[in-house]
Length: 156
Image (cartoon, rainbow, N blue to C red):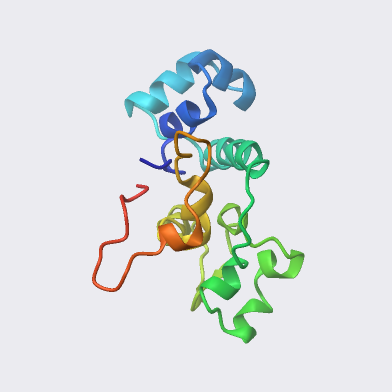
């Protein structure tokens, strides 16, 4: 099962942190983390982004694949890419962090709406995939379903 960037508990567990450790990393109280995880409060988008970015940094060290940047994988229109900040800075794996970023055929002004699109993106799915027992993440060949097959478990 993969990690959901919209679920703080999922990210915290993937980082192997306790609630108090996660609270310290995010600069909030342990009670806030408990409230977010129990669904009593909605975690701020900035907290989810920071937690997700920490996970990305942790996993980036083990990335050995050569997956093309998101704008190539998603075949973004060149005109739209000119307005895409991720494309402008050449960061095709952290595009999910940027609200107001262009993706596919449009610009997303709302991070939760953009995150819904990102959950289906092969680039994001690859680094969110749970490492196998041997520590190796799925390769492009193993993560791409054959025609007529379902695409693996959802990350949401």
